[in-house]
Length: 285
Image (cartoon, rainbow, N blue to C red; front, side):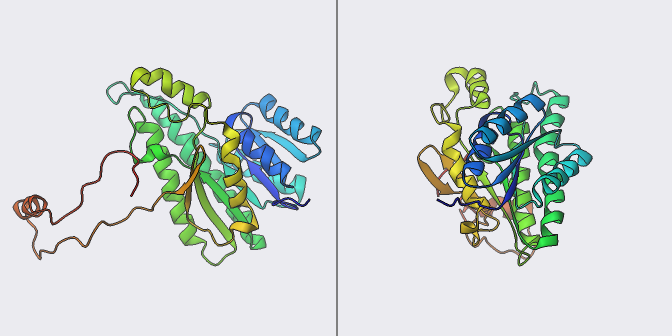
């Protein structure tokens, strides 16, 4: 039987463990040649070796996505190894929890460098390579935490930036044949364990007992030609539920005043003419 990614070459970043490894394995099972990236060479090669042992095509590439030159070398390695780059899954990321009163600035910076710059750098190199052929699919990885989650200032900000980057690149690439979408996965990984341990009784347990592999079909779908009509969208996977995350939206029609003052702004809110006010966190419409 033919796979959904037959003949395609795909890069998956941060794929030595967890969600990234699940994406890489399913992409290979669906026919893609996969370049498995991780900062830990042994982890990347272990996953690539598993894929080859199962009859698939895979190679590994160790390097930091947060470095512009290494990100470029990663994309170039895919082209050199497999002849092209048809897909990129920007999965690499790090996770730090902190109360804002105790946030370490170096940890905050590290989260932004890996999660935002790493996504941006790999994406920029991949976009340029894909535009030369007029085809390709980029799948960024965001998170529902960008809507607001306790102790996740750095991580939530980084994933909000990834969502915005997805929307902006989608606008840039309309009509080029190169698509950009994002996923918001939920899985029981080391990151979920850290979150549960940090918050203790206040933790929501939202990712417990949800295997990483449960998220992979949606990612492979976005990489495939079956998703040709999707561009600039964010798909959410939460256990057995598949849904969409709405784009930032102006609520209602607002209210008009040719010369706003602080008092008239206050009066508009008091009268209920502006809003509705959104709750904090990720909620259903």
